[in-house]
Length: 220
Image 1 (tube, rainbow, N blue to C red):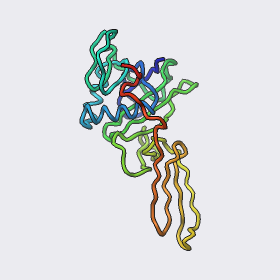
Image 2 (cartoon, rainbow, N blue to C red; image 1 turned 135 degrees about the vertical axis):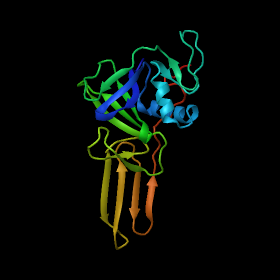
Image 3 (cartoon, helix red, strand yellow; image 1 turned 30 degrees about the horizontal axis):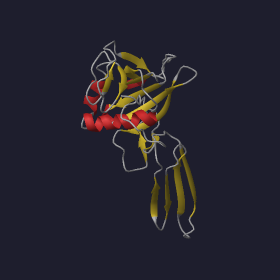
Image 4 (tube, rainbow, N blue to C red; image 1 turned 90 degrees about the vertical axis):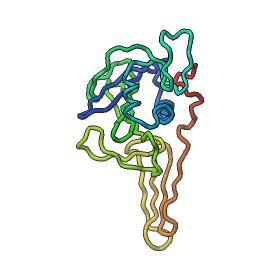
């Protein structure tokens, strides 16, 4: 079953330029795959990756695409299975969503960041998660709002959850200062601190089940 998806580049004012992926998959599959493509195929050159993704529409993305007898076009090495070279899509996050679309992945080139949106039952894009292409050591980081001018958002670098953070602070049992616990309500990763031992970071496995193939369709 296909998962119609858009992938592209974010612009000012919530606008974007994107291409269509017929088998796009959800973030648990596609985000790790895009990180591998960014690293293995484009040597962490985000601009080059964006240019290649916007060159055509796609059936699916894959790190090691193999020729398939039913494909009308040969696979693009290190990137995936092309569909056609139709018109590039120009859109805005505030516009109505085509009923067939399920996901939108937007690259923020200057930040090397990927922001994911999901289509809602109301036909609108809702921000689902944000992901650094190169995951940082800090568990929680702050990032600028997507449309500029808004408040900063807190991002979990394990699962990409945005502003889904629970923070608890109580007087420390050490007799001075405070014990704190900051956790992601999506994946459960957390940072616990106390005056005596400092920070203790717990990173929970994410995604819960790692993709078993480099092809988002699960077939070669």
